Length: 480
Image (cartoon, rainbow, N blue to C red; front, side, top):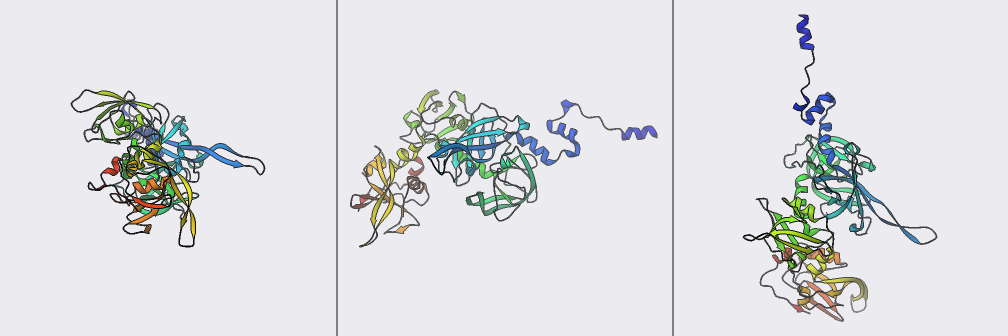
C-alpha cells in the first residue's frame, strides 16, 4: 500500500526539452504563473517598439534672440508588421498637430524592450493618413525583425480578455489587461492635450491605455493583433479605444503601403498584388517618373534595387527606403517578353500635387475684394507662380499672376448660379478639395481673378485617380 501511495504522489517526469515548444517549455517552468497575459506578451512583445519623435522647437529668452533646439516632441508605441522593419503607429504620434513643421523634417527613433535585446534604431516616416490616425515608419537597419502576428476583428467576442502593450511616459514595455467591452463605437476621443478627433467603428476596452500607449497593440490571449491602441475617452477614466485590425489592414493596403502616397518622393505609379501573388502596375501618371522611365501598365514587378519582391509588403519595404533624387532600379516583365531593367529618378513629393495634379504651383497672398458698392475686404488667396507645360492648367490658359479665389463643390460654400463655390486659403486646402468627393468635375470648377476681370474655368486633369470620374463628353470652358 505504501509503495502504491509513493507511486501516485511521485511527480511526473518533465518531457524532454526537444519535445516542448517554447510556449510549453515556459508553461512547464512557471506553472500557474504562466497567465494568458504572459503568454501573449512573449509572442507579441518582440514586435513592439517605443517611438520617439524629435523636432525643432523655437524658444526665446526675455532678452536676446530667438533660438531653436532639437528636442523630443512626441512619444508613443509602434507595432512591427513586417520583418523588414515596417512599423505602424498613430498619426498623432508620428506627426503631432501642435507643431506645424513638415513631419518629413522630424527625426524618429524606435527601441525594442530590454528583455528583447533593447536595440535602438533610427527610422523614417514613409506615409501618413490623418483621417484614420495611422502612420507607417521604416526602421533604417537591415532585418529581419520579428513582426506581430495579425489576427481578425470580425469575430471579436464581448467580454473576451484583451491585452494592451505600450510605453507610457517613455518607460519600457508596460502591460495591461482587461476585457473587450464594446465594438463599433462612434466617439470623440482625446488624441493629445490639444487635439480631439471623432472616430467611428472603434473597439472599446477597459484595459488601461495611458499616454505613450498610443500606436501600440491590443492583443487577444493568443498574442495576435486585434487593434491599434489610439486614445482614451477624456471624460471617463478606464475606457480606452483601438482601431480594429481589419481596418488597419485595409488602410495599409489602400494608402500606407501605396508607394504613390509616399511623403518623401513622387514615383507616379500604383502597384497592386494579384490573387496569384504577382505584383502588377495598375496605373501610371503620364508625366510621372515611372512612365518616363518606360514602365507600362500591367508590367510585373520582379525586383526593386536588386532584391526580389514577392508581396506588396516586400515591394513597399524596398521602395519606401528611398528619398527624392534617388535612382531606383526595377526588374520588370511585360507579358510575353523577356524581363528588363529600368531606372527611374524619384521626384520631390510635392510634385505629386503641383506638377502631377494641379498643373501649377502657387503662393499665398492677400488681395482686396469688394463686398458691396461701398466696402472692400482683404482676403487671403492663391497666386499662381508657375504653370507647367502639357497640363490641364496650361490647356485652360492659366497664367502666372492669376489669382485662384474658389473651387466649385457639390455642397457647402456660397451658391452662385449652378453649383456652390468654396473659397480656398492654401494650396493644401485646394488639393484636398480637388481630391475630395465633392469637387465638380466635367464643368466650370475654378474661379479665377486676372487683373480686374473674374472668370470661371474648367480645369482638367491627367491624374489617373481622377480621370475615371471625368465625363467623356466634357470639354474645356473659360468664361466670365
